[in-house]
Amino acid sequence: MMRLIETIQEMRAFVTAARAAGKTIALVPTMGALHDGHLSLMRQAKAQCDIVIASVFVNPTQFGPNEDLQCYPRDLAGDSEKASRVGVDVIFHPTVAEMYPNGYASFVSVEKITDKLCGLSRPGHFRGVATVVSKLFNIVQPDKAFFGQKDAQQVLVIQQMIRDLDFNVQLEMVPIVREEDGLAMSSRNRYLSAQERSAALVLSQSLSLAQQLVREGERDIAKIRTAVVKRIAEQPLANIDYVEIYNYPELEPVSTLSTQALVALAVRFGSTRLIDNAILEAY
Amino acid sequence: MMRLIETIQEMRAFVTAARAAGKTIALVPTMGALHDGHLSLMRQAKAQCDIVIASVFVNPTQFGPNEDLQCYPRDLAGDSEKASRVGVDVIFHPTVAEMYPNGYASFVSVEKITDKLCGLSRPGHFRGVATVVSKLFNIVQPDKAFFGQKDAQQVLVIQQMIRDLDFNVQLEMVPIVREEDGLAMSSRNRYLSAQERSAALVLSQSLSLAQQLVREGERDIAKIRTAVVKRIAEQPLANIDYVEIYNYPELEPVSTLSTQALVALAVRFGSTRLIDNAILEAY
Image (tube, rainbow over all chains, first blue to last red; front, side, top):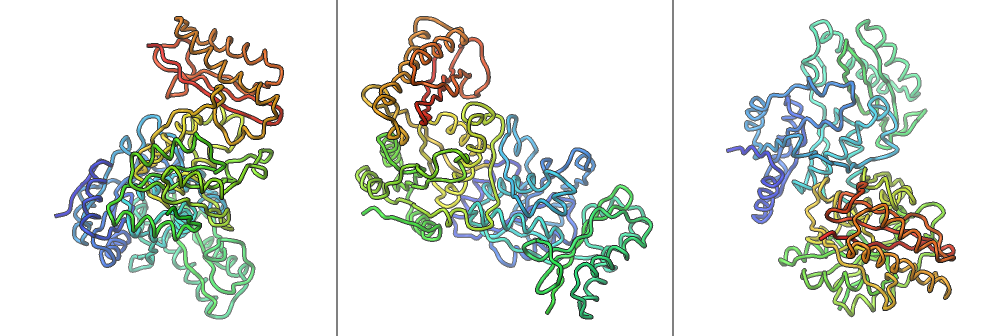
């Protein structure tokens, strides 16, 4: 039977008992509204650890003042059913007051790799992410934590934080899961109108174009980026927030593809901002 | 035999083995140049836990650009002998490169209670403290951590950080240890000339004056503060950085002493900045 735990104290007691019993522990941090991308993380977690703890917490500190915190989809009943089916042992679902009580004042920041991409578009976003993940690490003390490549910059931020602050946790990055037509799974896809849903295919298509150019031998990053921008701009419903290519995993500017680079996109369709990415490999 | 450990990896291995053997672990974070104040922390730690790990690390991130990082006293041999005598099991003495490798970019900040006292005089100081203590907590995973009341604001910052970020650590605050004539023990006392050393007695004397006023029934914080400032200003070698009284432990402004308040002083004698404090109790 999957358990639902809502307090930090109860979560700590569960983890202490599991550790004492010699179990390994996986953490899958989510904001709920679970889709197949999340379930893929949970399956991976279950394959690698004895106990899987999935947090379902819409973390207010990672939303900007004009973002979709209030309307972000919440469906604990549906999430519980899905998580249960893939072998999750515990859903940790604290309230906002449990995680950020009155007088809360401590934050974790990761510099440098957060000064671009979503760090630029969403000031404070990664501070909120690093803070809540630090809290979850300290509460759950997992052996491994599972994150999706969909949020590629987030993965790098958490990896840097683990290394810098000496968290005793191994990060596992799991590939992007896509709909059959190529749209990357996202809890925000449900905001899209039918027209926008169709237009949003331009994201995965433009990433495929970039990969095709690399396969054909193109190594000029500026040319690849221009082709991606052009492809997206052809879609009238698409409003580009950013289209960038950085070397990977350093996220530094690069002019010629020599090993790996990340093409990262953030594009608005109506009021919905979607992100997607691909790693380009020059092998 | 006391052990000296210089790498994070070796420290983790030691702690893992100690935990597996069912031992409780105390951490005493220091910057070395150990004096009786530090030794008092270590004795307390040994009385309460099986294993005492004292870190000796002059943490560069808590020093400002014009502060005394370069000349801060370092004496590992002397420190080891003293720590060994009070039952310390391990001195953790990492290099700066071990703690802050190239590309280091993650920091822990505590807001609100850091916007006053030493947080104002030493911008970035508490960010450095919170960051290095987070790292030490993650490396050592202590049951208890011991800090001196001498750094009263630091204790409150760490306490807030533990609570906010859900560190599974209990903080123990140990009283100030003073020289026979009243000067609070500090690694920086050795910077003082004979004249300055003598002048610095005005710190503990002005704190005693504040306590005497409270014993005599004075509850007006402004009057107590004025008396303390006046007493220090009578000493020509003393240059006041701050003299403040805040309610305790909230560190908020207060006009009438009703329960507890902290008198906190930072005063320069020549180029040496000393701090001292006392908790006033209206009982």
